[in-house]
Length: 353
Image: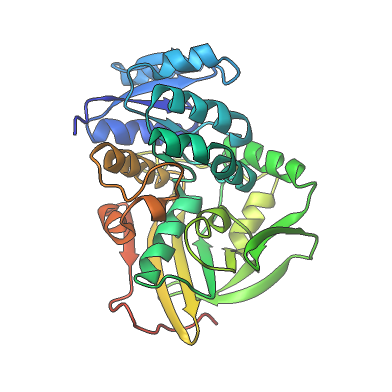
């Protein structure tokens, strides 16, 4: 694989986009900065000193084609993905290059599978949506935990965030999703996405030590409800969020992330705890790390690296767990993420409290 080949980062000036550009450079790729704001792209390029800029608006197909010309892949970091996802993946398919995005918008994730699967499969082009902390990491953990299982009764993904300081992009995407749902909530139950007006409820979740028992917003639904059932036979997928983090996200005055180290990471820590149930047997997989936005960079760039050197299991539109060897991918995330997987394929694991 020629890691010096160009990878376009659409939305490079955003909070997550900057982490992705840095990770591409660290691995020896040649990032190309793209997005809608030419002036901001030039400012960012001046910071790096040796990167190309190709500005393109999402409603200008010719400009997108020029932005992707000669590239080996594109990573879309520009939300709301309800606006950018379709045009950028279509440009990638025209160029015949892999497309990866970091979308956590459930409706945009659904649309990626529904609207572009046939074209991507016909052209043999890998397309991986939600290759991020939400959607991608959980899907990899669930897939690795299931192992040789072909089906399970239920999946729970518990997000133990110490805090959540949302970026401007997160807030914008949240507003779009809220409007598209007319304020309703969503769950994946009985094998389908279902919208509802049920009241928010809480439950306790027993995380592995040292986090321990935490109060959670039950069914705080994230992109895992799209990625996991896209390739695994699981009729119930539920995601849950620590009460404190959910409150941070809801707070209008919660500040954006602040860097505490040279890499730009915030002091936020996370534990993602997955529990898969099949009959009387349960399996658990857990990931720990720092900064949900920063960790999206190694997830997305590792995906591109594996696609370009042929370490894939399928083509077309596929989630992380379907596209890659999940356990091997998770191990490759060290030192960004510490992962605990079941020791034995048939081991029964402790339950949530």
